[in-house]
Image (cartoon, rainbow, N blue to C red; front, side, top):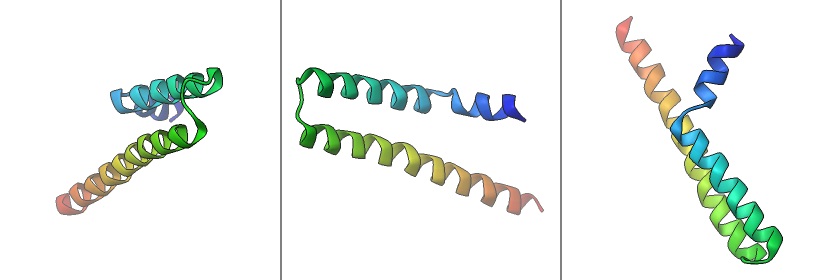
Length: 68
């Protein structure tokens, strides 16, 4: 069960989201971007990631229901 969750976590969307989060955190810490810009970018990235996850779950549920 743990390995299945880990496998789902390690996909391209997750890796890109984590990397973007790290990069923008670093840029905010060293002062390259301001807090307002960081929050705008981070909100879009996280919203996109979780929005896609929710949509993927809905598609899986619909497909499972159609098989029954």
